[in-house]
Image 1 (tube, rainbow, N blue to C red):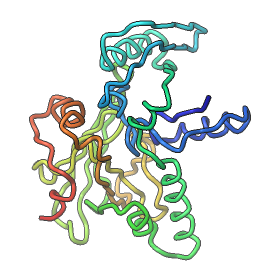
Image 2 (image 1 turned 90 degrees about the horizontal axis):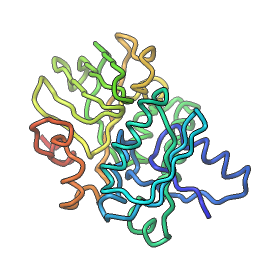
Image 3 (image 1 turned 90 degrees about the vertical axis):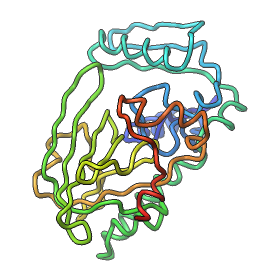
Length: 268
């Protein structure tokens, strides 16, 4: 038995600690492809059509729900979301997987990558170097925008957090405005309302001074005028397959925007 993180995000620390306490291994991988995603269906397990039954869902009320058959990964997401909505906004689903499914349907070495990013940020801050540049070196990513926070909206509905972010450009982006639409995590961006970097490529808003990412779940962090950089990465290879892009792309969220890889968007 071993723990497998669903996605790369702040809640992974709890699995790391719990695994250490119980003496259970934690697999250095994640299901979403070195990023976080808002829906349980947005995983490599869906891309390879891995079985997800039996599953269990726990709630803060003490309910334990066991499922033995489900139509699809999207239906599993819908069921869990409905239970979250009637349980105070959250629930805890879990599935069991064979090793072969983990090997084929997860992104490998992603927890190690997250740790390496954290170490690079700390080292840069201690040495007085630019933490943003340190992140770019470790991730082989792209600085897709830079500027000051100009606006932030947020709304909680359907057990999701939705909203928009506006950043007024500086330096090479002077005179331009980046808008980001998020559903829990950043999904779609525009420069001056023209489509720019989109899911499944991951992109994050970073506080320039500290190198720390800004969470969309923390409205108080989005202080107007705060200097930030926006960093993006190439999506996991599995997301860029034909089936991967059918599952996860801007049209999944209702936007009539074609996915263009980040390296093409940033080459202009």
